[in-house]
Length: 274
Image (cartoon, rainbow, N blue to C red; front, side, top):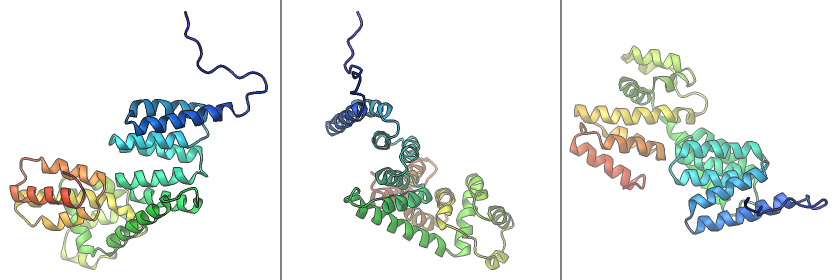
């Protein structure tokens, strides 16, 4: 015996609005499930709502937040981006994408999304306006910090990252990346006279600086050199990706105890980790 349909197909003349009403109820149920801690049921309801209203960003925003809560930031960001494609006029979709991108360390995407969301927003956003403004202020501070790094400092960090076997691909994707790489390979005092290496949007340089800071810290710690400058740089990029990379390094048995304690202190005090 077949199970009866829970939702019957509407009779002629009743089609108008039934999908919206049903999707709205599913969204309300998903919200209640989230409040009760039933993440799996919430996600199931949101996916049902997304099928009913494929042109609505709301279900996708909810799904992306669940994925982010699980620590699956790459998947969360993909879903959040899809929400913006589905409903490009949704201020909340853009704000959500911006917050998730910021948490995962995609600073350029975060800035562009938050700016778009705030431009579209208004009363719809409520308290998110202030939260978004605070996030953009932080991003401007990071941008100013990166743009203000002296050439030797930037090059030193990038060189450490490349020496550790990371960062080269990132570096080549940056403006004038090939030129910078050649300078690094030919490290000499003449590089002090090189033109400014940070061109275009400084936020484009955050990924390679992150990789360089983490790799540079490990190398300096293992070799008994000064590792604090790399921790200072990492502290200026306090996102979940940096935290994850540093946490992995903290578990490296080659890291001396003093360096490990400094790293754990950074994770606890600056990044909110344990």
